[in-house]
Length: 444
Image: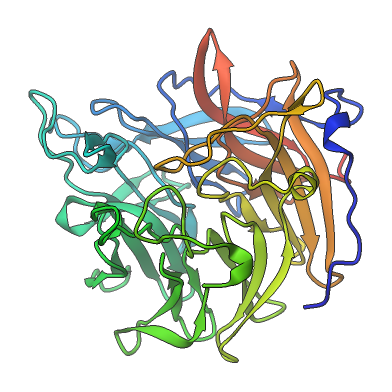
């Protein structure tokens, strides 16, 4: 990969909130007053509609599944996740989230659920051991299918040991689903055609169920399939790249490749508060026959070639103001809004940018013990054109009233010129999360 040729960006101190100079996001009202932060769970399907989940952090309120029709701009609720999982009336901790994108296979959409309600134990969010009075323990995440034509949702299998699905990838040619469970980080394989589920064990340490300073390890939030052979890849907090070969039913570590790069920074992978040496988000690029990814905390682009057993670093995809200020972006895990666009050549990345007030940089806290924002930031759209290696920071995204979209960790890029994500908005004096969209640069 050659050096970046061109960078275009405005000085951070001069970032304007005017509609003439910035991308203005439309905010939609899904009608879910309890909506909390969402990760990954928004996808533009082949029917052109936007499918998404809004999360809940309450023990007795489930996340909600919606579909948005760009033609009519109508939002239709598909269902309550607890109901869709067949647990309504069971009085167990709700299916509060989906942390994964939607995958199309055999005319259906496939996804998985996760818990949104935690118990604070030893200063950390843990899987609940002592549920609220009258409620049972979380039963575990479900892998589900949804038929957009019939409107039917089916629960296919339960994630073992009462754990949720913190990440998921699907081989849509072979009907294979791969998940990482939370909190222990077990690698799960499910074959849609046969109905066989396999638990291949923990990827690294005790996952996020471990003790800080000992066996705690942050878990991989993004998996990627090599469509040529069906192998799937994950990362670990210690910087290893893991490969699962479904044909051989073998989980192995790539000895030739690791993510412990000086450019990514130095991390104590036994401590919470960052993704450590994990990648943050990855996808398969058909043109290069390789994996493109971003390291969350540093924002560096990288290319992984599984056949050549090579990992090459590219440019830093952080916003222009972040690069000039020399600071990490404010979200402690990095950003999941990283995707290949419809042209199969352009990467779209929703990242952070420092906020200045009266010429002074607003700094957040230096460290944080979970995935959260350390302080205020602007939402920037960065694009990177793979063939020409052209980077561009398109500047910040604002709401029409000048407000900032916050806690953005999802992206869906539509062929009709829009970028969709989920962000925090203020509604009737309360902060909730909901669907937003803005025009892709160059689309009017």
